[in-house]
Length: 521
Image 1 (cartoon, rainbow, N blue to C red):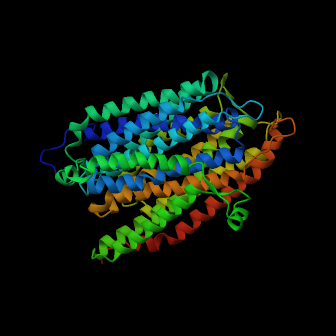
Image 2 (spheres, rainbow, N blue to C red; image 1 turned 30 degrees about the vertical axis):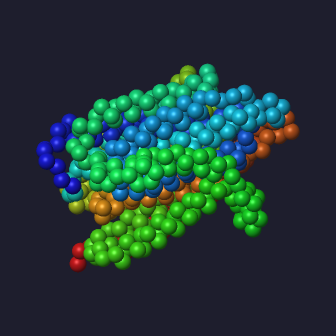
Image 3 (cartoon, one colour; image 1 turned 60 degrees about the vertical axis):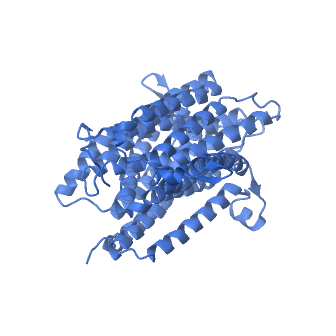
């Protein structure tokens, strides 16, 4: 990284960090606000089953996290991060406002198919928009710091807090508006705030210090096909990709042997696309390892790929908080505290609120441990993340198996579960973003940021599949009782607990070997 002027700072960090902070905050407001109400909207408004709702959530969110691999590559080679973020923001605004057209609710088994198709198209716009915006705004943050700047981890923790400020605001506000006023107004509110984030980014470009520009502007402007520049071909190709994603989201494949393995559910085309993308990524990574890079860089890249792969399992567990955790709150939880009754979708704000509360502590903790020579390595932090994630499910497993006298689970158990889960999140998510910018070879950093989000995509799809294990079928009267729901949730949460704890133990065992990859001798 090179700069021609000393970066302007605010509170000890480059001002560009706060431009990215606010852009990402409002983008995440839109994204998580929609996510908070999406499963409930699908089940209650369009009559989706639990399993179909969880699967669509997983496949849509999976694509939203897989496409950053493409967005990162295009930014590295052609667009630059600034143009990619602006284009992605425009797609996101269009998609969020498209979700606001909800049509008519299901009536006697008859679903408004036009509204459902508009929903699929809108989700496709959002997924493609995330693909262009998310990896590149994160990469810009990393480029604002010199290679060995000790503020990098703290900077990413601050940036990560922006994500969660958006998430907590959206869960409360969009959740309330969606459930109590109109699903349509809830989705439209997300589009409005995404537009605010886009304006902030455009106006704040001078603070990016030229670190987000195209690698070769002349090549980007060259005419490549039919008189169109490479830049416009990328934009038109992305719009064609939106049409493809629109169809992918609703396509399932009848492959009987694999269907049986997946509990009778058909394989989604999204899952096949993700597997192909992952295979291509591993193939590219293998080529890169033998492309003449030095041994130290090779060791860093191998460690980064291991961490990236492990993150998929963490997110597969974590994202249950937008599926079974929400339906647990809706069906079998006393959601009242201090005279206030939460909506089920609003409970998703608890995790983001804990991130905001814990961020100052972790911003202080990592440099303090580093000065004392006690800062855990990347691998150990990921091991702790998996252990805490498993522990959060242990809390809910106990609560579901031991409801109160009213037959309901207290909201305080969910609050405790989120507190434990977020300890794991703080040890993995902002640290993973920092690891990508620190361990990557400079020329592939955006691609590796895309790879990080691709494995988040795998996590989303894993979450969708795991969520089908928590499906609760309505009784003959179409009603699900609290007791029926808890009878399903208690063993499900127990299974998730053992997966998290077991994976964390395995990561601790592998930590000494992984740490050796960073040695220069």
